[in-house]
Length: 324
Image (cartoon, rainbow, N blue to C red):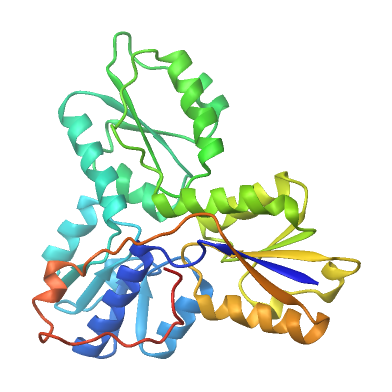
């Protein structure tokens, strides 16, 4: 059996930054340390931090007044920021800068009098945060059918934004429907779907047809990981979205000659390596790395955290080396 190991895969710059934020804040404040929602959507990452005394909360009422609090990589609404100020929480913002970009675009379009069509998944943490920037000016759609059902006041100025972790193909279907219905619709000069999401999707599109089975490492609540599995499945191979090696079923590989392995942007590299080692032990698999695109993006820690840390302090390496 041959393993085709997709590159790029795994942690993106935004996830690296968010996890490093949590590592460094935990070193500085100690436990318990509170995080608004999961720091990233990955079971293994969350469980490892839970064991170290991190508390993930869905409401700031769960956080003691004056306690340290991290905002997750998915971003938060202005209402959450105001609630944190009222409770005198020591907030550190680990929002991915690419998500922050979408928030700023929403504010700009709203201030300029636009109705904003946000393409995204209802209930996703990122979507909730973005919609909170201008709740009376943003309409959420997920499909082209949703676009057809839209009814806006005549002569409305309309713009669209997208969740950063969508399938590029799916987003383009909705965008085309929007352009057909609103020919003058405005949009940001630079695509909102993040570079890492696009790169991982491109790698799967390029490599999946070479494989009989595709393993996507990532959690079910990870939007970008789910999109990778959907893309792979649409191309023909049997695709499985799994958190780790414990979910692998040996019968998936009956009569299989090649397996493509990739990982969503919030999946740590060590879970990828555990799956590789399993296939090597059980099936004598050999590994062939395939590079579709190089990534060299790095986001600095937020200023609010950098100001707390001693100069020259180095972060711990606890979650496996990310793919660069």
